[in-house]
Amino acid sequence: MNNLFKLLPSVDALLASVAGEHLKRDVVRERCRMALEVIRKEIAAGQHAQLVDREQAFALALQRVHERLRADFAPSLRPVINATGIILHTGLGRAPLSGAATDNLNRVMHGYSCVELDLETGKRGERTDHVRRLLCELTGAENALLVNNNAAAVFLALNTLAFGREAIISRGQLIEIGGSFRLPEVMQKSGVIMREVGTTNKTKLADYENAINDNTGVIVVAHTSNYRVLGFTAEVELQALCDLAHARNIPVLHDLGAGVIVDLRQFGLPYEPLVQDSVAAGADVITFSGDKVLGGPQSGLIVGKRDWLDKIHKNPIMRAVRCDKLIYAAMEATLKIFFKNNVTAEHAVLRMMTEPVGQVRKRAEAILSDLPGEVIDKFRIEIRDSEGQFGSGALPLERLPGLALVLTPPRYDAESLARQLRTGDPPIVGYIQDDKVWLDMRTVRDEDVRGVVKRLDSLD
Image (cartoon, rainbow, N blue to C red; front, side, top):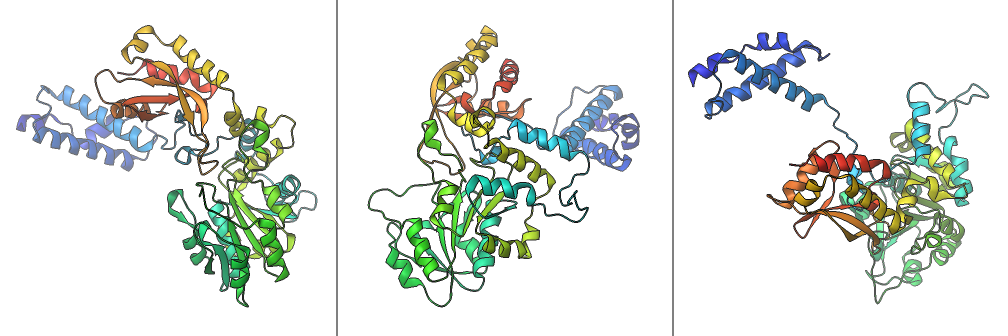
């Protein structure tokens, strides 16, 4: 064993051979030291008995240094092929951006842009102007703002409308969504005093009316987008609640969550409340996500009545949650798609949601036709019916009929096969069911087909 230790090169000798990495010398030196330390521990554990000379030991150490440099400095955020069947997958970045959004990003990201400069006057401009008119025209609202996510939108609105005062909300709407976002906790941190009314399954107009007092600052309505309470239930219509609140000069905050601005029924999908409906019902402030059904980048949108949004805009917290030029570029282009006749032709999320099963089948068949027969036989790959989901709290009870490629591991368990797919190039994320790996084709894009074929063909 001692002889094996003597075969290892010095850190400096190893460092001299690591060329072309374009990294600082001390950074590479540290990786050389770390690689040698690991090999020494492996030798002490009885490994590497096959090493017979310094040349072999040097080659092993050099390989380890390059592996560590690649692991430490290769991009961590990598493109992934989504084969989960979940269109708005939070772990995979939610909404895939449409081509118009990525084109607009490319236009502004490589240099300077007029994010906060009025080119006409040469004076400082307002970044919200890049999306305000579009949002107001699409929703019918008087004013609009953009922040970095919907949690920030809700927090900012509450803090502005009712800091130090009571915020009335139905017990049946005290929601929790993914990532431990709990509305009661957000309300507490925003500085409002939460006043619960009604019961878990039933809240009446009289419950709100009886709760209103001199310290009431806002009435909050939260759309329960990620679950449904069925059976013996009742909630107050938004318009009736707005009428009650406005008679007492109290604003209504409506958190819609998913943020739908096109009627999904035209595509044969169930109704989901529209932002326009909330505006028409009289809600003063409406908050929703930009990266869910809207199909834009991660952001939170606030629309509603001019006076209230002006106050929100002046809140010092607005600066802490504002968006940069890239978010504005992607959102502006995304919103403009909704002014076109055929929205689904360009809108990536809506296209995926409404794609016919026959088109999904074509992708599955295209992959099978390009795979070698021995790969299909080895993993017993077959096409099966599947059910996709909207994801991220949108239409939680609905399932999207689809098709999946189903792989049966030949020698190991399904988790090992799924991991192999995730860690390869390109990474493919599917799901496990019945000890098989399912690759749902609804969320696999046409441009991903070649990558899926390449990855399946390289499986062990």
